[in-house]
Length: 220
Length: 409
Image (cartoon, rainbow over the protein chains, first blue to last red):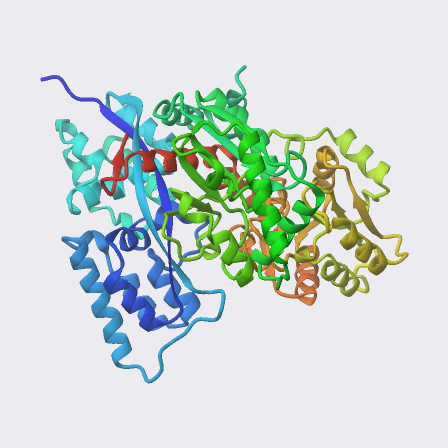
């Protein structure tokens, strides 16, 4: 049986302002209830593409905004634990977020507001992916490709793949399944807590796993 | 060697190949960019590199300039100020003049294209006067913070927007509710231009000597058009607050004219009056093509300021970060997209704040160097022209195929 090479995809975001922003927690609740899925996806799942440095406390924009702008660390911590890839649908994610925010508001005497200039501007995004034309024939070649591929490609093949498969798998482990010797590596890749990591950290952890399971050196 | 291939040294071979790959899907498209000047200002700088690179990528790109009398530029400067929140008083004849100049230019310019990008308010009414079917898509690229505009100015400009299929802003905070999609694409710099390329050390020192700047003493620098929103007087105040602690500090305010900005000379006079006779306070009005002089000054600065009160994006910040200089920036506009406290500089809210942060950077040279390295890496990854082109292509591909939510081309 001939083995299919790995097709390397790159991507880019077409980001669009919605014209809507949140200044307080009630507006955030209204927004979470009513915005299109593309907005929730952007703020909960596409942050890694926009992260700079390693300074963010939480993996999603809603938690960060609650922490930095609203000054509500309790809700920030709650929202920071919401994992969109563990939800079975966007409706499920929306329900989880709504519950967390409603629950927080229920116990407050005053609605938290942010200062002027610190509003959460709601953005929708659309992922545009394109075939780079590169075909990767072997796991060893995949390691080399992962070392140099853009962070956007990494996002597509891990985060976006999880979204496409309802959290089941990433593209690397799906492709590696066809190699008998990679079974353990496949399992380890699927156990990665990828949502907790920024993309540079994710790259390094993937390379470390390849090295661990195949005695290949990883590059720091 | 092709133009685009020169950038491989900066961004790597694969990034360039990705651009070619994306551009294949847009090959042959006719694209026209329209603005109001070829000289001076960030928009002209961007178009100077964007047009030839788009052409090299197989896109039939060209650049048209609207023209008008001096009064037209007075009115459009007022629009610019009004969009940034300054109260503006314009008469009906001013709006009529702008409208009429757009009509005249629509007849004169070559606007047969699949996509026409209209930059800022000067040419905004061109679609109104262009025959239907001549242009496939009109896209308004607004480089200005439009979040709190003067009501009268906005009401006039808003009337043009129904002709546009999409708009582009540098950041979400600049937008206003609109019927058409508002894409978010920050601008960028050309790392190989005269303003941003590496300079021979001999040239850098010769430039400083020619301008009268002492290379052996610390220097704080702000490079901007002479515009009140850039707060040059606030920068001078920061310098004067700092001077008792750092007697050797020099301040350089360097700007240049833009042909569509008639207020520059007036603001320059204000700055010269305020500067007085301090030999360590130098104010330079440089010609619009003094890019290598700006480059030398930025590379020589100990600290770079962009203490704006309102700002579009702030490409001078990007330029400084690219040269490994931490930036003290006014906490406004696109500066907040680039300056992160303790990472690439500091955001400040007053002359006192600027003075305080400069003292910090002067005291902790190791942190200053680390922040400079952060800034360089940050610009390389996010604010070079390759990213900018990629964003434009992504938008065009997205407009060509509006469904489904994710697109594979």
